[in-house]
Length: 116
Image (cartoon, rainbow, N blue to C red; front, side, top):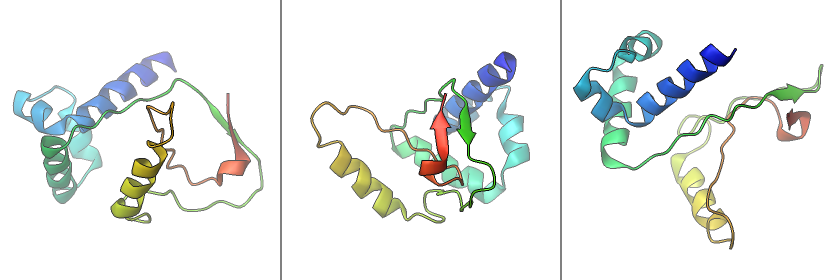
């Protein structure tokens, strides 16, 4: 589990900084190429080259209620318009004391999951 977690963290950081990593020909780029389409990689390169993103993978487990309804993952710009997500972040960051927002795109309704 721990080895997989470390590699997953590296892959997430690679996706966030994809434009720079592609230029350096990072050794794990083949994992992204296997899992994505060319058009998805172009979008990833465009986004990572013009914006400053930070990704954090928390070393936690999420448990859910069995037999409960499931939904669709809230993937930005697929089921959740990017403009809506941007507005949510903008509004939440105006609250004093908040410096980070974690986004959980899992398909389970939030009241059926618990972070351990």
